[in-house]
Image (cartoon, rainbow, N blue to C red; front, side, top):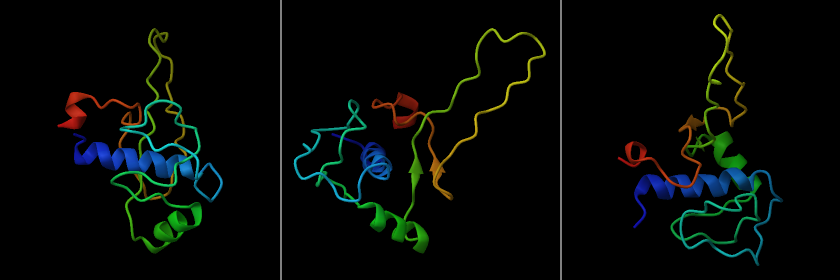
Amino acid sequence: MMSKLARLIAATLVFTFALALPAHPQENAPEPEGYRADNYRAPVPATLAGARVLATGEAEAIWRAGAGVFIDVLPHAPKPQNLPAGTIWREKPRLNIPGSIWLPDTGYGTLAAATEA
């Protein structure tokens, strides 16, 4: 069974990728059986067990009203190994939904045990 965090992350991923797609869910897109780890840029299904699929306009209205929590699940870019001594490392700028909560590296499909706990 999926934990509450995994369900929340799955729903968030569907929402996050819905923002990049047309405002209407794809009626013929299959609903994933579990956490969607592959083909995540595929059309968003019209339904998702345990979640509500939102059109872009609905998500924007919730965000503007402050009526929901938006979770950014994109990864944290690691510092490159073997940088020469004295090299200045600057984090890549993160483009996210303003006010969202960042849970880095939880969008990979399988949660680490520590994250699951």
